[in-house]
Amino acid sequence: MTSGDAVLGDPVGESLRGHHAALARRLGRATTCLPGVATFAAVSPAADSADWADRARLLGPGGVADMFSCPATPPPDWEPVFVLEGRQMIRPDEQPGQALR
Image (cartoon, rainbow, N blue to C red; front, side, top):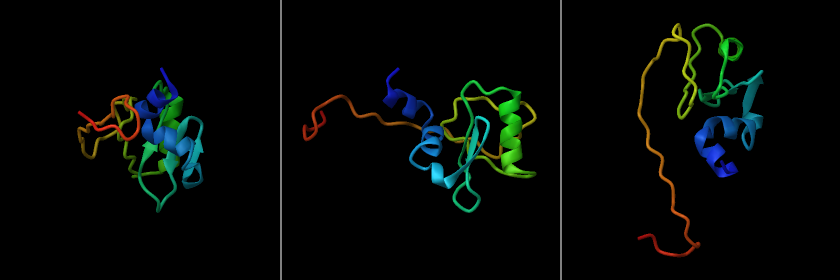
């Protein structure tokens, strides 16, 4: 897996741990945007019960975590508010400036 693959595999987590870390709060391996910024959240793809407990503490009672593109499956007692299937577009390896076919 290349570093680009890792970013595409967990774009929210990579962003909140990287370029947008100043807009995030973190507890253990759970990360969310600061209140008032957004509701995006991330947790390790191999999240365990401690990771989910950390996320719950970050969110607080009644908190919402947008888990777009999150590869981890929430525990059964977490209630989905909505489910939205997404698509990811990837540009083929070509030289910049070349026309896409």
